[in-house]
Length: 383
Image 1: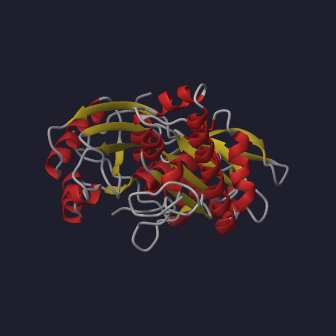
Image 2: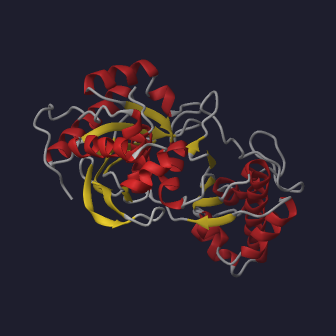
Image 3: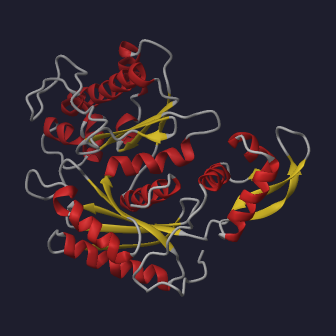
């Protein structure tokens, strides 16, 4: 899973992404997203001539981004055409997830597969410490043969775990810090909310042909949201889009720390569930106790209905092709599908979206950060 080391860049610097013509970048995105396409199909999707597509294909091959896989019948024109396939190891992306003092790093290839990972615990949080670890990991990854084209740090834009109240990732890495480190590395270094990164990660495999919208709900101590429309992540004017955690879902529910009664956080967050089920340290303990304690079962049933209700609200608002439930949602909903569906049906005013669940761990958060770097690179962002 290694590629040829880039001998033209310093061991701790970024290998710049090729400067492609916008048409060539758009063609490459189509090739990568569809795991290979015939030139005739790419030309049709982009609305360019076959002659122009030949030049585009040549530009991508010279950049080392694609290879010709052979000749097969075009799905739309019924005649043979060269099929271009992405070369997955031509460039890589480094993501670092910051969760309190725990750092997890991952390098992915162009097919969003983790090819290298590392982790560390730091004595204190600060831009200098984070950048030192990043430089070391970038050097290690490059020594292993990976050409890293961009870096992304991701963490909570609301509250980092195990930090004083009000400390989020933007307080740790300021914009001036980010810009200075990006200049030092010779390429893009981004700092982004973890839910935006997770959305970039999840939309990659989950939006199929003809699908362009998705909502993501991550259940944990907090509840986070991500939104994709027209295959673009919605971040909002202040990069704070998707704050649905305090939407009312149960009029008779418990209060939350902000004073809301029966909001999604108070009903379905792991923090609230643990507070309601006294003497429980983990959600796993709560789920186990629910088998013999009816009162605990009612807490989990209400949490499932709350999740269903917020999916209904999102369906009413943006009508997504699908909704993905991540984090501890799968565990929470085991055996409670009827409760979830009841909450959804009570709120939804139209066709109900396809709902999928996914497992997620610490390495996947770093994978998501790397996916964010890939996503922004493919979108033409170089700053």
